[in-house]
Length: 105
Image (cartoon, rainbow, N blue to C red; front, side, top):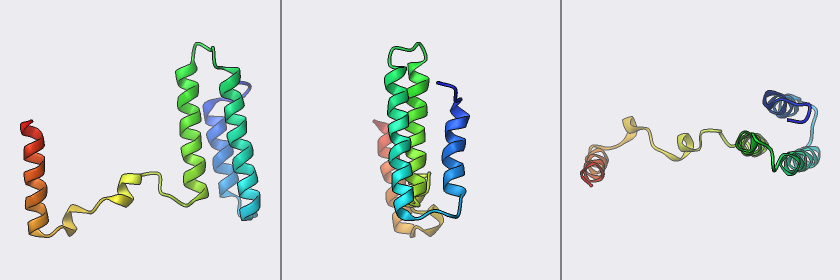
């Protein structure tokens, strides 16, 4: 993809966020420039035979950038769900009933 492999893009993102010497303004500027770079890559490769791979790279890179810059865990469901061990007996029964209804459909 334009002198960079998919791993190179991810590595570039991870290296930036692993560096300790950066402030919020610098992070925002870097984030904006990286997203612009990804959009330029998409524009250049729009008619490429590996467009799906490029779209996946861009999508995953943007998710990674936003997750790291806003301290959001990559596993969104992990932060939104409840651990089944912490559910009350009533909640477990309700969940079981809902799942059974879904399976029956």
